[in-house]
Length: 115
Length: 113
Image (cartoon, rainbow over all chains, first blue to last red; front, side):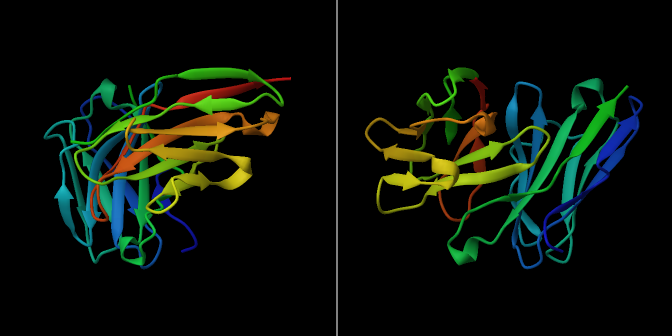
């Protein structure tokens, strides 16, 4: 596609439910990042993938959070047993580091509201 | 470990005035530095980046930033702002070509007519 696509754009769920957020990066981009943006908190790094592997998972807040990437393309961020503090905008970005250009291309985000 | 500090959460300025948004970083290795902008109700986009070479980097919309290794800073400047510059600005750092990119907490720039 022309840009990074994220779905759903909005998700409202009840506390304790599981949610899956999807990211479809720009075709050919080998690096994929997940960030969380909360009001007044900036962008919090969660995890990044190089191909299908995740060299750095240090930003995942707890073991309720997991992410995978398949085929070097689509990634899914899963939050189990959601809590109200998980409410935020989850941003996905992709890049092509081998080109020497480190620019991240961001999706529009998935806004998660946990009631 | 890398970290980024944006010292000002909000910066109000008058239209056509100059502005400087401050960014300091910490990293034990060579760094790549970035400024991203998020306009109201839009996604983030790259404003400018420092990878190597000249320490003065020019970006879109008349913005520029200077990499200062001794002061570990990468402040963003514009000599004359416009209403359309109203946005949130994020500084970011990466340690190498294959590592995570860490963002600061953002600076909200508001322009007064």
